[in-house]
Image (cartoon, rainbow, N blue to C red; front, top):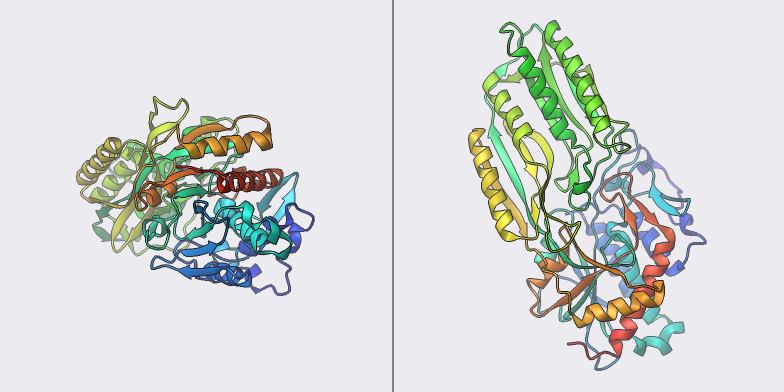
Length: 512
């Protein structure tokens, strides 16, 4: 149990006092207080179902675990889907004293931003859920009864497992979700309209390890990479953030190369791990190694050199990076064979991670990338997990082939899972025109229209709902998937206003 989970009497809603629009912030505060790791959404789902039933809204749970609710609106108007996801990435700084997967999060407001104490905030996509619920509150409240006909009929679609493998979006049942106009509320820049997204997958490279008994002689230490910025492996892959797993691999490889000339001295590996989610750029990684005194001095020198390189790689991004050697928690009873260790280190260095190509149609948008997000030992095998993405299926197919080849060269195998489709951009849709006009009403200028190098559920949902037209919008969220995540307070009110204006226009539209 974390430190805060045992604290009683904490007012988890007081931090929103005075924030506007109050209806949105109250809903968000209630959601933020709940644990909602991907594949563990039962508590937040029960909360949303209870909240909808309090409002007199009919709501159900489908076979995938999604919540679907029907909110009445103007007769004859086309049904509009408001969609957001219930789960969040649960990341915490070392020593945070709280685990969002257990305690929910503890937000605070400062300098116009909302952040959580040492953890991810979960504005991705808790604020989208909150806005959809706030619209339902508005429609069903007595004060708004006279305005009910100003909105079209709505389907609120709250999906599960977006941050893992899109199983919720993939499980959308067209017999239950009947709307064909979708507003995805999971974008992270206000006054921006997303009309396309990348497809992707999750690739597991698994390498069998030959183990040997740990020798009695030698110095057992833990090599740790920590203090990196981290971030979203799609939306931030192009800003040159250092990958802790890759940095660990470089230290091990450079140390091994230096020691190769001395047959009496070598680096032996007992354990390694790093990262917490394949779709987050790893902030921390570690390895337990055994070296002699000469090897220890080499390891110290290489670690210091790599630390200096990481800090200089991108000014201001990873200035607090630490590559350190500390005493191992306990002496291991086994070590990887020299051959197995070499193959795994080679893969840590060789596996691609970062931007691979840019989109020639959309300036500044990444077309293809991948992220080596997680490394660990399981069932006697090294497991390296990557998240390739592309707006072009041929590029993804080629990447999958590269993983297969790399894995084979390393004596292992590659397993491709959790594939999700790209969402091709449509620049001329009538829905985009309505959304543009609504943004101009609020901001006094045209929104930026673009695509994102990240998986959005709209692509997966569109694969199940024929003739679906969709856009993705949202308030400003920075640093998603890391403890630096923060939500722009003022942008939330403007975003809510935009959503309301879009719905009002769609109620009177003959959108095709």
